[in-house]
Length: 286
Ligand code: ADP
Image 1 (cartoon, rainbow, N blue to C red):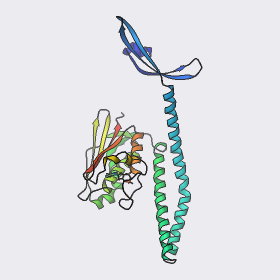
Image 2 (image 1 turned 90 degrees about the vertical axis):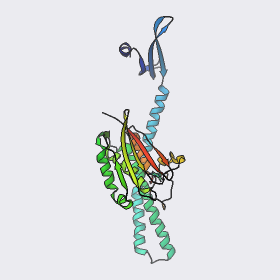
Image 3 (image 1 turned 135 degrees about the horizontal axis):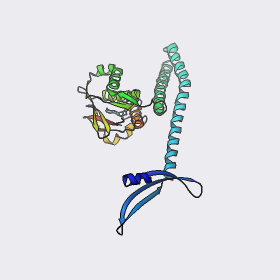
Image 4 (image 1 turned 45 degrees about the horizontal axis):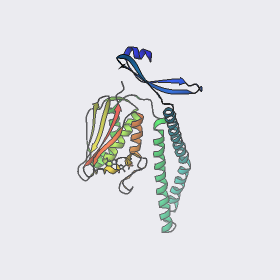
């Protein structure tokens, strides 16, 4: 700290651990600035005890990790019995469809549908809880390649919707390639799913703003009312019924979790009836 003061003339937010008289270790942040006081040069020093904040941050990290672990274990362990239930009701349907009365067919049909839906929800929850724990270390990733893979995975729906997709050149960034492919796939998949009546245009763009890359995925689809801009990033939150548009409502929350894991942010601009643009940033890491 003293060396920094000598070399740079000031000290800003220097963190240090101090042993208090009670024997307890406290976290202190120090700033120092030379000032003139009564025509004499002095060093103005500010010491702030941030031990409580640090403790709370650690506690938050711990409880988030615990929550993720819980979601992972719960969804993982639920898969097994659910698979058995789904298998059995499907068997029941295959063997007894049309052989019991109409009402039995209807009940079995509902059970099959509900068990499939629950399997989808649990798989999605598992994917969500795996973002941190099972994410790969960030490595040099060519986003052009991620986009190519995402588009290959969306080939059928792209053809069905006759989507016209354009993009600017995408950079190489430090990222988890599989997770970034997932983000692009979810955003482009949504642009296709929530398209309007006219021909569909989707554009993917990238530009550098200071030390961040900013990406956008824009469409001319049905758009979203501003009051839902936050809600749609929460787990299982959707604005439509499954009959109108299929899906579980995990896609955007997964994107948010992945982008935040990379140190970036995600948000949108949209006008109902005119289209939506989803933006996300990634810090430039060299
Ligand atoms: P899902 O697609 O399974 O519903 P998401 O989390 O991906 O789940 O999206 C949440 C909701 O946000 C969607 O149900 C939809 O209402 C809205 N949404 C997402 N992307 C778009 C888009 N490009 N245009 C219009 N609405 C969208």
